[in-house]
Length: 146
Image (cartoon, rainbow, N blue to C red; front, top):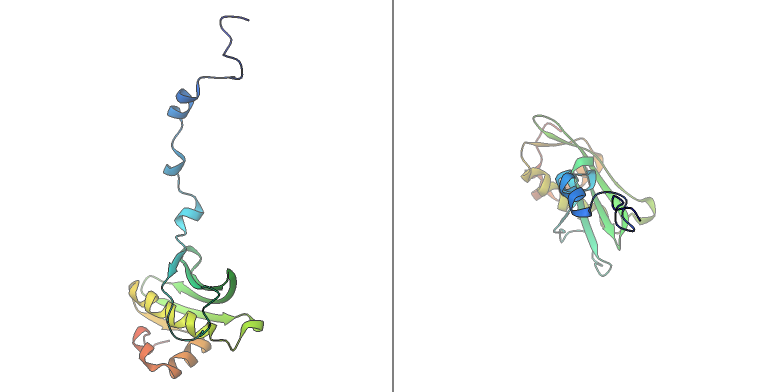
């Protein structure tokens, strides 16, 4: 064995030298770490059977809220973020899951969160408009030009 050869099983500089020369992986954010996917406290309105573990997740980079039941995506509320306001464009519940209160729970959870994120919120979604008619106390979270 030659005196210039690296130790057996090693083909380059020792690991500690290589690691020191490379930036830490945590210093380069990836999409997953940027997309906070915050789980929100769920509203008491809507779904009455919560034994399955209802969650509402805000997927900020993708501009939507998602309601999950036992890990299954059941409903979405989609919005567009403009420079001077946030516009709710769509809310939908999977066809086979309708009538169980998922839409109500999602909207009641997402509206206050959207309003608290700054700027006025306007609505362009018929489902959200129907929700607001049934629950007028939530109208305070939405501006009048939607």
